[in-house]
Image (tube, rainbow over all chains, first blue to last red; front, side, top):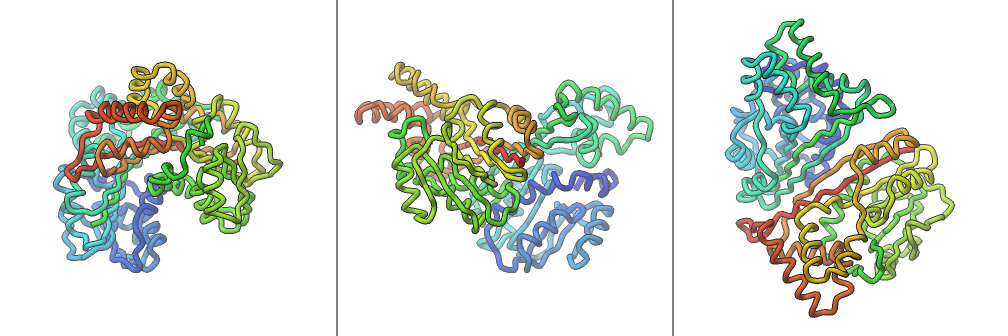
Length: 260
Length: 260
């Protein structure tokens, strides 16, 4: 999901679906068992997280929202039986209750987590679970350099694009914010190391489907190409090719499971 | 497992079994499916990892080794049908082949990973998997302060005890060392955040069952008590109690799954 519907391409996002599904599977594995929960997939993207949620809870009554029409169209095509709607997490107000609230790779686009997280947990019935996964990579070279290249080439766009991502709290922050209303709060941070073919070009392709969106959308085709060229050049010294020509992309993610 | 059989108490180790089982479950979830593999649990401890391995592969023909007689006794009691033997990973030479080689929380006690890891992978048949999890916490306050307190109170013991743990390679190191002979190498690093009751005393109890062993074993009861007192005092400023009196213990662990 994103703050701008038009920065998202379902097809580009799906290019790395295997890698992007791994953290979802890890997140869902930490959830308690439920027989046939009411479940919602907030920021459902093209439906890959919804599919894994259904595999975890085959009897679930599942719905999903995303602000991107392209993503919702892809999700409906993938899972015709699920109620997918265009919608915003901030204004989500379906009555529920939802035994499972999943928010995969979406809440890092939203501000004020100290208020947001407890407000989501408050929608759970007793025993219900909130499951969150967020990229925690703003200080990785991939993202520092994205900001630096943008600041150099397109300072105006850089300022706007930088502001679309929220700086995450610490693990202890989320624990405190949720523990007040939840009986169990499990927080962990995992850095995956994805081998990507094609050297730093592989990294560029990866982030074209996500974090680069807000930087690229305002540019025309030629400016986009120059931006990506400069970005790849900046990445190169930080991601040395391995013997097989691939690079390892370290990708830190923060996970939170809170049971009310 | 440990470099000194007598530093290990199965009962103390089991105090935090839920927390210690979580990384094992996460590790096993990343393994490929096998029908009825020959499997070995290297450094099996009291058999908790073996139990989870059997749950993952119910038809497995499983054996396990550990250098601690106390641990092997506990493992045999837990799983009478499994062939547990006292033995050392370094000199392990059963013919195999083993489709699954599990080494949970043991290889960080052994040196020379650049040689050790490929030598374990070489024991796999094609398609077989090596699964490794190692605490990666030597630079955490828990371990820095353990070394500092020991150096101050018992410098002689500190030097010996410090040397029992191996400094881990980077994720990229393990990837390179294994990728040469394995078709797929998956490396990730997870920091769990365990809420422990009783403030820093909870942390002391945790590590009495593992990392503190080499520091405590050479001491008499009174010197042990003084050591633990000084250690708890040193920990306090780094692990502030939460509203409920517990502390969060961040615990980083490195995971490696290599498929030959």
